[in-house]
Length: 531
Image (tube, rainbow, N blue to C red; front, side, top):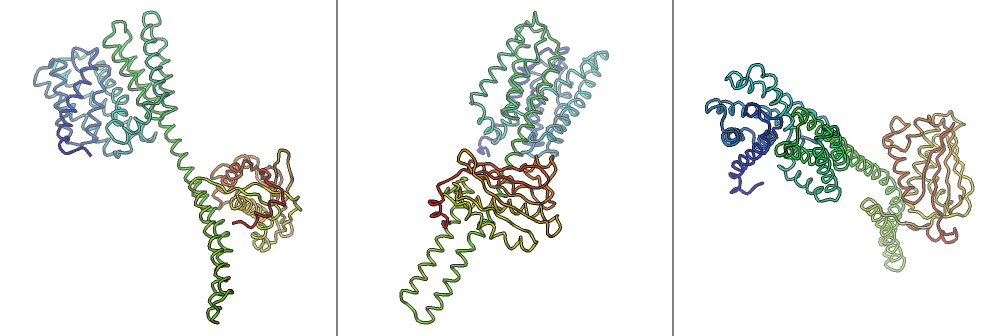
């Protein structure tokens, strides 16, 4: 919010800035009238209308009238000048009102669909505005009837190109969020580099007019594509505006420029459309990526919640048992070492539960892991025991090959989550088989390079090669009720441990988890009971 004493100043400031724009871009006028190839000043008027609504009508009228008087010397006479300014105020106001109804103040250029709608409203409004204005001038005898079509295209396209090229940057400068976004990119080395490239390309292209006849104009797309692909719409808006300002300046103050205004209009429009389209795509992809990361984080929360429930089950059960024991002892009048021992055990179990919660909290905040040497046989035994009831209920035969005394360096909570996920997927796969053919086999082997490979093989039908190549993509699942996030999370955990997780396509399901080896089994055994 602006301070109250500054708010009245924004209207004269707008008029002054509008007149500056009008003067700077008043080039190649047709019949000395306000019919030029570029008119970026209406972009400023539209942004002002978007911000203030109908309250912008009077300042916009005064700015249009001031431009006719101060910049062009009122070539149409007083009455027609006032009438023309009134119509242009109404015409730009209609465009601004249409934009206000269609878009919120925070959602004008953040999607390709909105970008195209904005461009369509601007294009249609500019041409309609030009139709009435040029017809008015033609009726007054200031434009020959034979030149009506030329004047219409020159003014209408000039307005359209000026607004399309200039409005995004002006809109960004008019909002605090937009200014913050521009500040974030402005003083980067890459931004200065593509701005320098744009200036250099402008000089090279327009400096060779006499010999090259502008056949190298397509080089102007290089800095636009660079800016848009790296910095989205902010970079595109900045680069396109700078190029337009450079072209206008060269045309206005250089005697060497001989290219037709219509060709430069087309060039400006194409630079803007290409830059904004690429920028919008880049911004959308970044937003989708951020949303996907958040979704995966929520999926991880769900998966880890299951791990939390399992890990807390044992200490909570123990706490309940010790609490009942204490209650029984107090009922008998026991106050000696037996009661103290039970209370001490309760304190130990509550500490274990608290440590589990802290570790999971740290994982979600920072991705931190607590690595320890875990004996693979004991780890597998614990996970298979957890899944045992579900496997027996569905008549699934689970076989675990005798594992060598090997240990992995891993976070136990996270690796147990991965193993439960793999066994759960295998269980779902074999349920399609008839009873007696439902089998899951788990095996372990040592690989070269101090690595261990754990394989989960099921007797299910496997998946198609097409689906197998996408199993680790988010939201891809072979199960009708699956979210397609468990394997994504499992692979992420495996890779965070310096290992890998893959699926071997074939006639049945085969998942292979590779992890780095830890301390020898003799040393690992001392860690197995840690929470």
